[in-house]
Image: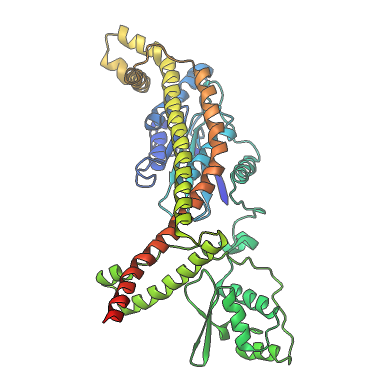
Length: 469
């Protein structure tokens, strides 16, 4: 589920255009927030020199059109795109942000996409140049642009299998109320719904009701006079007496005895899926690291639950023989590695094309300036006046030398190849995600089985020795 927000960027008080561009791009590219720059991508500009390229485009626009505005001049646009915590990986968020910027600007403006991972929710910062690539027009923040970018973001999320805010409303409400029915239900709401479903099975007495609840994965414990319940996916139990009217021990006993009628909740609540098996805790290693007896007791219960989920998975997928599990896990890993390799190759080539395309365009734009600089005898004064143009030109020449290019490719050919690779990525991603999830699940199950087999062997040997004695 993604939310969006567009903000026009001005120079501000006491700042030059150059300083304003450098400040905002420096903020969004912060290496501490973008995994040391790994989550920074760009279109028609070099991510490392984006501020200089934006400034050069603005100067060329002014020279070509003669239009000069005052302090209200918009130098760039800032788009923020946020995702719900835990739903998307940073790499995938960066890809969706790139796709959003490319389609919203209709590939007519240079932009940079920076994915920040310093908060609980992954979010993108997208900066696109107000001046278009031809330097003859500027982007205008039209009426309804916020709605348009939100709809486009929702479309891209749906195309890639991610959730959206179906009926967005103005701010002013709490996050859970704003999410509406998509909000995660509270623990007590979840328990009430589970009790409603258990009562539908017509249990004879309270013990049978608790048995029905345990079948759904709910934990039921008696602590003195209190009865506590814990729904699947939750850690802390809740008392039955705290579930409200109609769900206390007395109310439920009266319902089961036929003395009163139970009224289930009318508001539908989405019950979270049963958690998938996770890795077992190495209790001995944790105890050696300083964990106490209380932790050991918790870890034993946790491991028992995980092994129950593991056995359920093995039964459902007909993997009761270890050789079959090992073979399927190896096949899933090989399939994932193959798809990941194809994606990595495509992304690497796309990055090369993007960088080369940017350098070719910069080289053509700054060629006349560099010729004039050379004719001026490499004058320091001339270089200072045209620092951005000369810097971009020299960076382009260095890149061509590194690639050992004798003849520059056409930008049109590069765009065609880039489009083909992008389409290939779009087709591969759904299959890649499925392969990744399947591999993780199988490797987790296999690791749990391996750990149980390792711990069972010494115990069996010990029993044999004891019987021989």
